[in-house]
Amino acid sequence: MKNCNKKIIRLVLAATMMASIFTGCSTNKSSSSDASAGDNDVTTIKWMASRPVGGAIDKTVREIADQYSKEHGGKWKLEIETTPDRPAYLQKLRTLIAGNQMPDIIDIDADPYCKDLVQKGMLTDVKKYLKDQNFYDKYYPTALKYQEFEDGSMYTLPLEYHEEMIWYNKEIYKKYNLNVPKTMDEFLNNCKVLEQNGVTPISIDGIDRWPVQRYIAMIPFRLTGNQYITSLSNGKVSMGDQTGMKAIEFTQNVGKYFNKGFATTDYATAQGMFLDGKAAMYYIGDWELQAMKEEYTKGEIDYFHLPMTNDATTKENEFCVNSGIGMAFNAKTFDSKTKDFINYLIENYGKLYAEKEQMSPIKMDQSLSTQPSDLYKRIKDDMDKTGENFLKPWDTYLDPATNTVMQDNILPLASGDLKADDFVKLIDTAIAANSKK
Image (cartoon, rainbow, N blue to C red; front, side, top):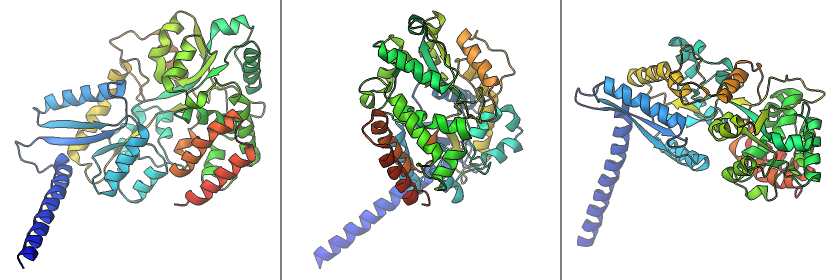
């Protein structure tokens, strides 16, 4: 009997401790933006971020949050938990949300998982919020359009704005009498000439996979805009359709010109190969402006945008433009205090972010305190002139499981170790199994 009583006592104590733990979690979450908190309480808003610590976005938001806190007598603070590694971040985010511990602010793409959260009523309608606060027209239309779902709804706020381009080594191009390619055929021919002369045509980061995935998206975008990937992700067309096969063929052709061992080449190594003159070309976005600026200023490198095809439906000034992973807001905690800070953030973000030589999604109507570089001004001019269509990365369309299948298998496809028909079967099977979930 004594043993039985002891067991009961231990169970009661354990249950009490677990209740205390979960109550503590719940209290921290609900009180983070509780408008009824006492005068001596500090309002804490929690942001679960997936951005480089010390990067331009991280620095800008922290500076604005610190200033906002000072203006509120220190009774307000932004608590940031950063996990730059995207897969690890998404796993952590899913676990928290599944456990009903969603932070006040999260980073998320406008992808199928985000859409699922929207359908469950968990995210704030950002488009409505921006229009209600008269902020909507302050943003570049394309930066906002990138954050939209197919139906035009929008639940994520952009903090960045980028164009992607193909950088090239001017000295290598001059040495082999190459011109900046206007078409994809000219681009591939340049690669062929370089390879025949013992030069690595393209350096690429295969470890992260998405840079290789950009290449398979190029031809479909020129032919259909984003219509093909939209239909593919919904299971309405096959990867083996005419457009899909053209994409596969191009990937196989261009893959022959990637650096040796590209599947195990990381981001820094791929970039270093190009900047050291060991590869003639490198595809990346303007977020690497600072890395490229010195060589560009010295006249050693330059860039061009996505070449055309003879049967293109998109224009020369339409290529991959994106506003990155968005900031989304917990619908349950997006109260007046959180909204007041986001208003303050938007009002101050554009200028401060631009002064770090970053492309702001918010239009600039103020003079900068720093003089931007020629490269920054050129890229900004490009951004101002981009067309209405833009290549939206395929990983924002495909469900997570299918995207993993594609990214894992696009490496052997590009290296010639996987046949086109096998790739088609893998993708179509994954979409059939996962797109409806």
